[in-house]
Amino acid sequence: MAPGAGRALVPTRRFGRGRGLRRPRPAPAPAAMRPALTALWLRLAVAVALAFGGPLATRRASARAPIYVSSWAVRVSQGYQEAERLARKFGFLNLGQIFPDGQYFHLRHRGVVQQSLTPHWGHRLRLKKDPKVQWFEQQTLRRRVKRSLAVPTDPWFSKQWYMNKEVKPDLNILQVWSQGLTGQGVVVSVLDDGIEKDHPDLWANYDPLASYDFNDYDPDPQPRYTPSDENRHGTRCAGEVAAIANNGFCGAGVAFNARIGGVRMLDGTITDVIEAQSLSLQPQHIHIYSASWGPEDDGRTVDGPGILTREAFRRGVTKGRGGLGTLFIWASGNGGLHYDNCNCDGYTNSIHTLSVGSTTQQGRVPWYSEACASTLTTTYSSGVATDPQIVTTDLHHQCTNKHTGTSASAPLAAGIIALALEANPFLTWRDMQHLVVRASRPAQLQAEDWRTNGVGRQVSHHYGYGLLDAGLLVDMARTWVPTRPQKKCTVNVLHNPTPILPLMHVGNNVSACAGSHNYIRSLEHVQVQLSLSYSRRGDLEISLTSPMGTRSTLVAIRDAVPLHAAALWDGGGHDIAAPGPPGDQQRVCAAGHRGAVPG
Image 1 (tube, rainbow, N blue to C red):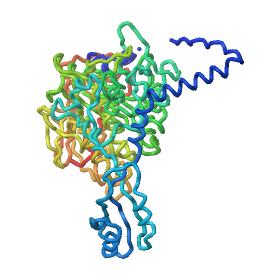
Image 2 (cartoon, rainbow, N blue to C red):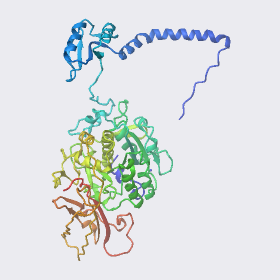
Image 3 (cartoon, rainbow, N blue to C red):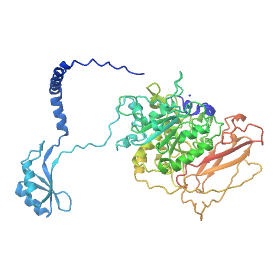
Image 4 (cartoon, helix red, strand yellow):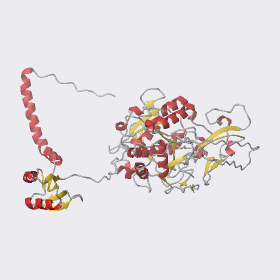
């Protein structure tokens, strides 16, 4: 699937969709024949058990039975001398104390076989009768295995280069799996064009409580099948998160034991109501919502969530997951070919979403990538046609290795975050943003705009803080100290230049609300709401510079894209092509996501 098909080509205002046979029962036998038949059946059953079950059953029972060894753990109250007396009396060899307190000792008897299926009853009776022995136990063999997870046996796992260590560095998924973390207990819902819930690589993890069809308003999110398979997107994203591992089919999801749901909401008329309902589905049950869609990535549209959707975000982060906050994972956008900028997308630049960008296998900026200040982290995806792409589930119970774009990057991040939630279920939505910032590394990612911010972190408008490292994220999640309650400080700046100059600087001494109850101790997010009037917004570049010198581009020049009147938006999705004041009136809201640390 081409990148544009996943995220840019979305519906409406974004272009927007057997039973088996039963064998009849035989007629019952006459009453006089029943005893004879019963006796025959019993004899046959015994014969089968002896022929096929005897030796095998014995071996299985032996594997489960304890195997006793020639050593004992003994507790005596009077220390080493008492243990020595006991050993000499009963013929044991005293191997020394087990703990430094001198009460528990390790004894071995040379006259006892090294391994036995039965305990030594004679020594048991002798130790039991001795008044100085407080406790004893003949030791048994314990089977223990190293928790290094075997590589999944799925036939396409060898093609999943982004997590099988074929590329260096990969997303470091194997390290997390080796710790026994696979997404168990975490629920992820993919908001898209549906999910093939009976797919052989999804059905066992499918969660109906995390699913709904808001296009037809019924509980079944099964996609609508068409000749062009245009509604394959949600199924592909779901497989990246939670495709079943070790089932001999396709590949493995990042969190292959997580529960996966699907919301069908992009295959029909899209409204603010439908978006809000989708983002509010079962907020106490669903932990992570993964969304790989947004306004058109055409380089002209400035659009974002409506009133109800913004309220859904607010309620999600304040009330979801029992007050810890819902996690909204968002693809940054595929409009790079059109010089689109994800700062103009009100979903990715919301402080409530965690925006994810893409890089190729070679660590290059993909041709479809959008650069913006709101991107926090990056995972792998496709590049040019000859580059490897993402392996996942596909419609009609199939697999594909052609999933592409930032549509493929966001679900990978959602799966990694599910692993971190399994390690620490008490992380808040803000905790997770802090952790993602710290677990993202520049690695080998190539870009011209890497800069070191005021606190020494490298950051790029293409990649955010870099490639997400699952092992590092999980390790930090285990010991993370929760963040303090969020506070907000608002500063108003009024500037009336006439006219707007080619280079204009608007400065303000921000005190962070010092002396008030909402004093900001450390900076996580910066939101700039800018209202201006200008003849051609494609000529505007707007940047924000912190006191420590970190410069974030909020709107970049998009001179290569012609501006058409029908494409003018005021930021809330309202067409303003009708006659009005001269110039392009717009409201720009850019979230300085790259906050999360001061700088």
